[in-house]
Length: 83
Image (cartoon, rainbow, N blue to C red):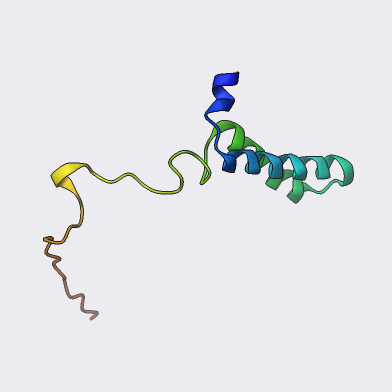
């Protein structure tokens, strides 16, 4: 358990705190929107998914010389004509 929490970043702790706050608010006052938001934030923090995860919201790019764009890449354009 200590190894699991040792890998957490400060963003995950903030996300866990926000999720816990909204879940507590749901149990005190109710409200389905509060439950949905709090549950989503809490689950993302615990499971390390979403934009706060280690990979963030970015997508993976190909490695090496398979890079999609570089300084030397020539872009071809195609004209689209409506009839």
